[in-house]
Image 1 (spheres, helix red, strand yellow):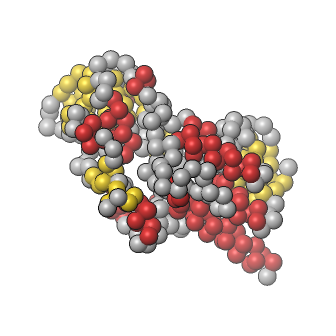
Image 2 (cartoon, helix red, strand yellow):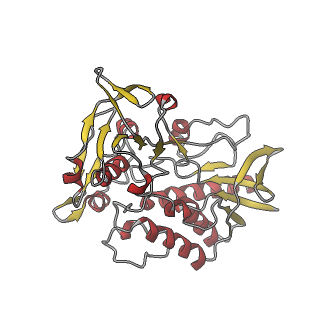
Image 3 (cartoon, helix red, strand yellow):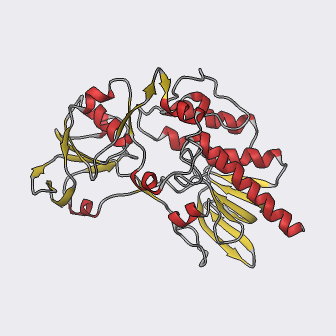
Length: 345
């Protein structure tokens, strides 16, 4: 099957790009490896709620069917994405994973778990949060461990002495939940920065949008350090129950040694250490394969016709939010139009 444009991934970026292309009556298809649109969100931990209100989580042309100021949970987002795809009848092939992306004589060739496609242009809107980033010392452990993408709820954990590793919001929220059931130590490789999610009764991210802060490009410091840990509800009180530990420098069996030489034995470890991109399926020799370079190029690969959406901080501080990702999608679609006009001209 041939399509002018194929989008890989039916998350917020792929859906937004698909809607923009649909409005231009483009010939396109979205490929989604999960069985249902929204499954990437359904698989995340049970208690997950977004920091952003529903008004900042709507995709183009269809508001969420909940109060604009409420913060949706992960299932509400998943259901909304599925409803969005059905509402606009977007051309999506679910349960179809891309195994190989190649380019031969100027035409992209896509091999999936079901069939093969050719396309003039490809938008990759997946693969940025699928491969867990684990520290090298994890291979020296004899005790069980999981990454945050495997964590569902406290039932996921075994033992009494738990070590949480990571410095971001996922680490903080999972750690706070675990303190109700376990003794939890929290190892961090840098000093965390905390910020209240609400200021003067307003959501701080909504305020950031109102003052234009979200639409600014992220600094290199922000890109490498990430956002602050947002404090809301009872999170601050729960985090006080976590015992802070320095960075891990060595693991041997169940014994963990921290910077400074202190050691302790644990029953279980939870890694909330982020992800690394998965570009293994891209079999194009000239592909740069560098996330930082792709970010600096605003998602435009040096491979003609190959484009990316979903890169953290791709074009602004809000790129990793649903609000910002659709702006990035609009930009990528506009670039497709530019290259098409150049060809026709």
